[in-house]
Image (cartoon, rainbow, N blue to C red; front, side, top):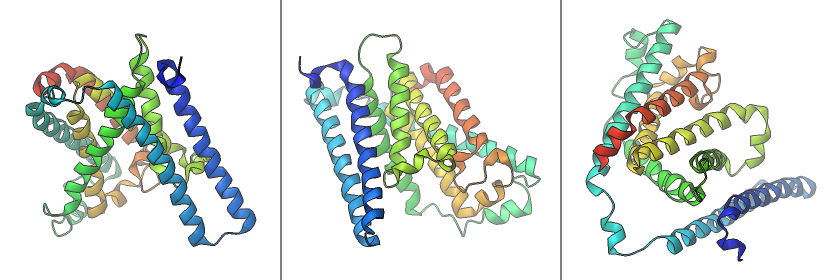
Length: 285
């Protein structure tokens, strides 16, 4: 049997691919240190390694989808186009409001709730406008990532009839999703400084996979992803993130995905997706 056609070999191929990538990154770092490469050449080598492996992985996933899906008119007409916008809008709004509520709770604990003068000054509309292209950019990034990591990768790992197949696909796709957020410095994931961010990104990946499984809609996963992106963008533009970083609950790094309170929010959203999954599924049908 051709190993490429063996479903059980899919995880093995991904692990092997990841091991080769990390070895290539380690070899590049070691070689650069030995021969003392200039910064410009080293950056070029980094880009070559990252984009080569990215193209190879993308080609493999596209080949899998092309061979396993009926690319005809019937396939496109079976997509629930009418349910895309409602599912996206509902999950985006719910996620944004839930994240805002958590932030308000933290601000109250820190003594600066949303109705305080310091926060209202940070929320000046001179800093954030509805016409800012970053709002749309967050939607595009979330949509593309959901198509890749949940639409392609998750379904690629969802094989067989095992009762654990959904959990397996969820965990593996979430870990790969997290690792993919730092391809230029992949070896840094093995440091303690990056451990909180790795955990936060993995929990985010699990949340988005749970949303996809519970609702059967990538639009709902993209809505949650966008809602979290919007709240992060709002925090950065209004400097609310500076007010939030005053407690271990919100972490000490600028990236709030390292914060225990955000981890709790992600877990709560997972539970919400499981509870409201049927209603959201009906909404997107």
